[in-house]
Image (cartoon, rainbow, N blue to C red):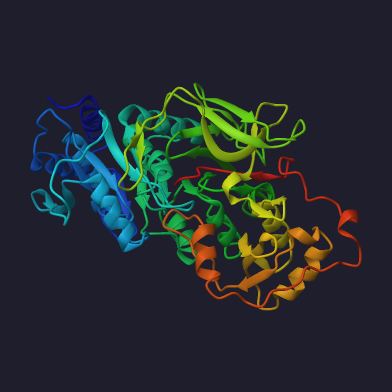
Length: 507
């Protein structure tokens, strides 16, 4: 007998095929497309071509990495067959990391679309069925921006809940054209795009990846009304596109820290509402607001049923950020490190490693990640505060700050940035000397043509730091700015109305 989730997936596709058989349902930017009837028939053919689960753990199938109609059809067909699907971005992660993840997850094979349904291609790994918590329908891996990626095992209930939250906060409607340019391998793309496509019946367009030069064209030619974005994409687009097509009525922003100043600039430039969300691969959506309740610099209110508390740090005064702790019934079934055992959620609150504070209205403002903190000789420096000062300088497009090992202080600040030809590191150093204490000023600078992004649109500070610090440039001594550090104003409070915001931390 088919599982309840398999029946749900089939009923959603059958409903679309019955109501709108000839209306476009799914398309990719390479030209492939399917209407409602065609989508249902192709997914059903995939399901029928796969073995029927024997009642024990369902088979686990690896999906192709690239976004496209083929990937979505295989995904939905595998679910209709009662199987679980595995997503690993084999183009983004190093080959040795991919091999280690596959050896831990142990999928039955990799699916490929065939004329009669799907072929299951064998993988070079140890034999044996995948070990998974009962009820697993989806296995993702985290982006690895804070270390080695880990596997996250999701239940149907959590997946459906988080998709319903997305649809409600974004006010998604049946048949509404939506565009996803991030990799569908990442959880935020799945619950913002794939699940509403399935349950609400939105029209889904997928691109192979983010392209600043092509995005406006995709939006315009397809009359896209909603799309998810991430802060890095917003920042890059602001330097390229002066106006977004009129059809776009709103977009979301999640996956990494969103500075209030960037949010304000985006809305002032494009006149399109930005709706920020906060969550993680393990916990799903934690906080959010719809368009009417949003406030710049806030990730919004806790989602119904999710309990969010802030644990003050040692010596913190009232109103200062502390660690964000979360209890939610929609937590992932388990996580698993490479070669390790399953870690199941307990009854205690989960430490998100994020720093935040509630404002008087009950909205949460985030102040970055605790594990991004740079500890310089006993001074805690959050890179987001440094980045915001640099990105205010005319001509600077993007800045990424991080810690660089130092014999004397333990760590000092380094910064990579992009900008106009006339913007140089020495000019930025002089500017920051008037705004930041000496300890906060970058010692090492790298001017890049572009800041590399992962398939999920996020910048990995760890990976960028590792690549850039293999050969350090000459250091710049902190400038005195002709006045003492004690006389300079402190950096702006991270939870002010224009302070940093944040989104889904693990893709």
